[in-house]
Image 1 (cartoon, rainbow, N blue to C red):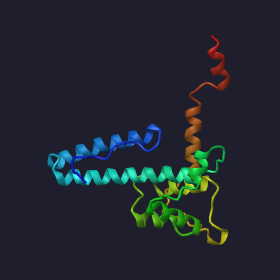
Image 2: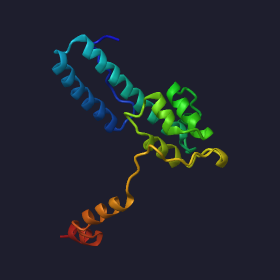
Image 3: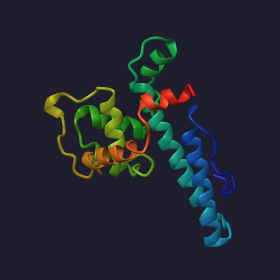
Length: 174
């Protein structure tokens, strides 16, 4: 890889991943520059890190498309049949559907930087796909789980600062 050719682009039409890559590039370049005035060694490390992020984003988007359950167009049907998956994504899907420890697989692959184990669990479970009951790993060890009571209190406190829907709609008429 050319030390001066930083991986750039976007994988899907949502701006969030493209913005993430741009931000990571700027931060990484500044860090590389401060370490060694953009010496090849640091640029190579930056390029490797950016390539890993792009591949992680690609796998996450491909997983969404592959797991989709829509049948309303050839696009979605073709994506559901897509077998051109990266080795990492094949390993994750295999771990999920065989009931292996998905968190351990993510750590083994070293791919938890872009999307955490919790994100992958949510992605797979969100499509209602689970391994057979006798293979289901019940352990949530190592997952950074949210405290739902704290989240509920935060949302209640923030919602109290805004008008009700009725008040907001009435305000549009004036």
